[in-house]
Length: 49
Image 1 (spheres, rainbow, N blue to C red):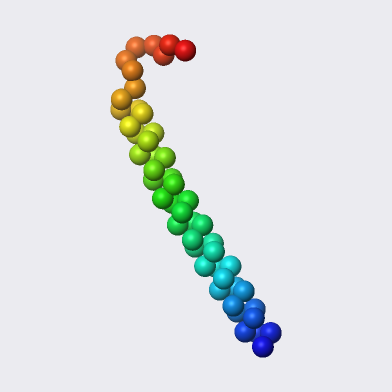
Image 2 (cartoon, rainbow, N blue to C red):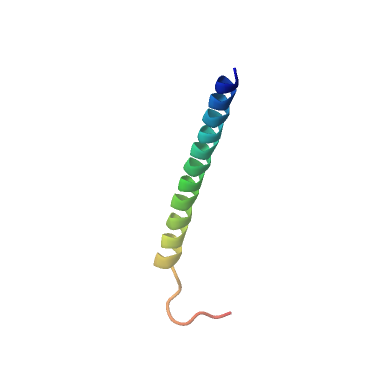
């Protein structure tokens, strides 16, 4: 029984890690896309703050 509980805990942990990595991957792709849009459509000349 203890082995089964350990296996289920390990499975839940690995599943949670996989979900977190998948979400971070999509977040990274969105941020890279926004960076590219900002890089391509930046104003010409000097920045004015």
